[in-house]
Image (cartoon, rainbow, N blue to C red; front, side, top):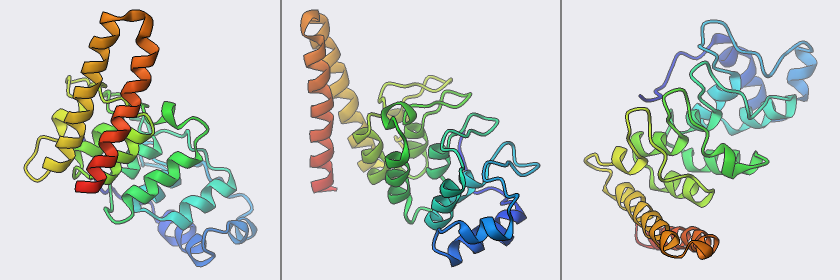
Length: 217
């Protein structure tokens, strides 16, 4: 289960992307020339993939900003239940962490949306672990509350998906975060009345691991 570069609808490349790129994400010219343009429209034969999904996959910041200005929804999903965060994990590697950080800043509740799963149980963190093991992206998701324990329909956690040659740095961050989670759950079981304190300690510990990882990777 993965997201790869897919066919981009001609209307994206011929109209939406060039206009918004030319005007640095300002949507007024697009709206003037195409007053009936629907930023939430899903081109035919794209499996429910919106223009915003395209822009996030290709790391076209200007296009994504312009689409949001026009009224595109960050909550839009494909027929496979992929959010724009899922799609931002695929496609071009350059600008991936920056795009995901920006997207998370646009959501009202990043902690909830970062854990959205598709119809196969894949959260964005699973995608990040599988598609290149980008440490910066994984670190960003964890900082925004990504659940390290989520399993796909096949029972795989993000840490398990990162166990590929060349992904050692990503695997180390994910496995350390997973160990911290297990330890704090055990502490909560020993002292249930202190569970909320241990939960907070878990979040703080994960953030500390990310800071250390950033310093050494």
